[in-house]
Length: 112
Image (cartoon, rainbow, N blue to C red; front, side, top):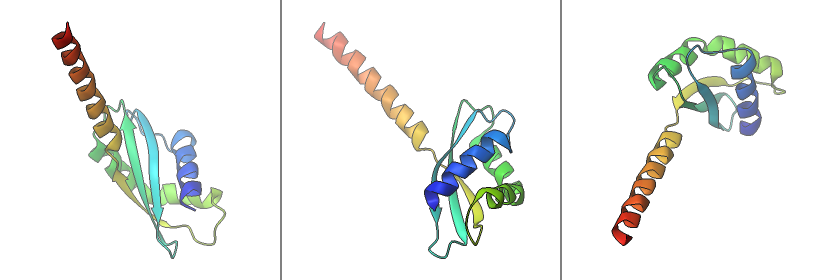
């Protein structure tokens, strides 16, 4: 169910709900409770002119509309309530990559 919701929400954010200046919004993970009443939706942003807080607040404010679109596409008895969270793992991975690149450059300079 989590993967299906993640896929549908990704489609909704492309075709039904566009957030101006949000860059590339990706649904990175969805966690659904065992009773299927609540879905925690984790999103990541790339090249966004808006802060993560602004995007999360927009999603929270439009939660009912997003849930409506989800209900139209989800084949389930219940449509879970949606809670949105920012997933900063992409940003952390980018920082780690940058640090590793710097370390490699420094090692190459030392070996020269």
